[in-house]
Length: 247
Ligand code: 6GU
Image (cartoon, rainbow, N blue to C red; front, side, top):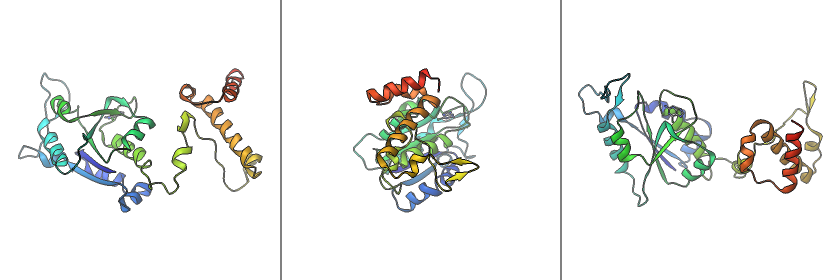
């Protein structure tokens, strides 16, 4: 997976993707990161990339020219027949989900366009953006953190990035259910014991307990997810019991 990030703050992206699992994935070239400083494509001797909004109003707007040139610079390096996905990070976009992460993870290259100020001149967005994406219903100062959130979620789906290939599948949101609770040593912590079943060595019972815990958690914490969950008839009855008992 090759990421190309168009931004005014390349160091923020570089720093954010240098550590831990993503840092290791970059060392192994499972993912690559190219940051492009939009300011390098300024058309102005003061390296300005923004200007006042036509029609007036607060704040500044990023100019079309530098953004377009930065995009062309990237586009010219990517040899692909497929149409290139250019993701614009904006609170006006479609809210990012695990399903979208799975779809983006199938691409060879992804371009992220991070805006700042009051946004980017609409005309360049219309020319280059294929996907408008938000990471949730709140307002951030720029697209850098959202792009990093997306790259994190996408990277862990790239084969080899996680050490263990099962864990990307079993956890939260697999099947629209939340993950079951986890325990490790010691067996007792501040008077609280690890559930007996997990010490039993009985794998079928453990699987059954975990599945029930996943359903219980989802009922308690994210009932909105249950509509998309794939439950057996028996599990649906269990879920209804939980809901009627007001768990
Ligand atoms: Cl993608 N950008 C900004 N500026 N704010 C956001 C966002 C994106 N997603 C949620 N809030």
